[in-house]
View 1: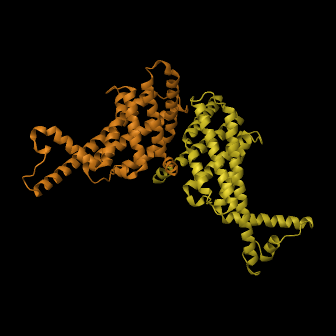
View 2 (view 1 turned 90 degrees about the horizontal axis):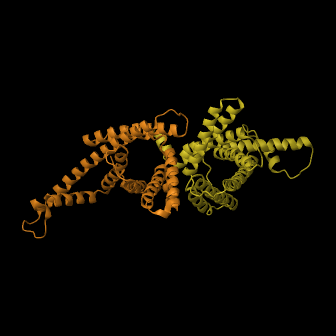
View 3 (view 1 turned 30 degrees about the vertical axis):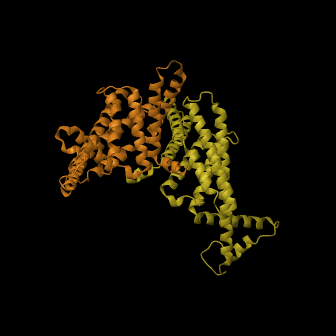
Length: 246
Length: 259
């Protein structure tokens, strides 16, 4: 219970937990909707999802400042590609949070003549750009890691005797895809934060892709993706060493 | 900017900010009503207050576990009175949060059969018990400190300057065993006690903050349970003051009263 209390004391921890609940409801709704006698349960799931989603807005208020600070930090990253990607991604996050705050002002009724649809689309678009740039940065880091692992392997092979037996898949040129995947698997296994971050961004991008009509999926897929990314978010809050360092 | 990031990373901090905003809205709504503002504006303020209240209920989901954890820690305190007061206070807080969660479930539509009024009254009752326990603990601490202070003044040499209480005066206060006597004598004793109290509170800011916060908080359940109707203006002002004080204790951890 102590660990739970410490986890929920952090805003991010609590927010990820509620996000997980929200997307679980979405997933369950998708699974239960076709069933005939589950209308009451589906209705309750919908109400829970919408109240948790509304309540989570309170967690996001003021995150503009977080995003601005993250932008300032990412300007000082040493390598060029991550610096560029992260800075632009964080700038997009700033715009996303500004749009989100405007939508919140509309939802509590402080200013009524705000075009909800326009601002929602704008928020989704900038969230999508920020996720895209994060994925590009992840791909760059993966490629660096793969290069590193391949070089290490080559060094090890040079030092070993030439007539070693045993299957060496990477040597067969026809099995290029298999060797590529093996290298990818080996690099990601050595670097769990990178794996978690890549999976999280890929899961997260399903929602804006659907909202912007770029790639329409169903609420089950989005719910599953959201749930997975929330679980990864909770892991990075509970175990900070699993967070990808800039 | 860095300070805001660190502050808002605690979920309790955000909840306190929402509380301050909610009571500010309540106070503002009362002021606008008195000065005859437009019904449109009043409706907006009330709507915002409602949103804040519901949002805070969601932010507080899971606080029962936190309160139970604090109660578990308080059981190991050495002083008997403190142990009792703090543990019972945390247990009542845990029950208050549990009732609050039930109210949220009712408002969110998950449990439509929840009797909102009954559960609201229940939750305020637990909140009141917890505040009474907190104030008892504060009174006990004040009494201990006053005894310490008066005995310390008694032990100081009679010729010491700079203190509002001379050795003989404090000795007189501490050694009061004869009740009755004339009215001026009682008035003098009362004045000395009040001065001693002021000195003790001045020397211990966390205790002063805690006393003021609990006293302000006390008006809210007293009003909601109908025990002492003070009106929405007083409730709003007290709620706002106590929220600001608790935000202060979050910003400056040395101002928090350590058990």
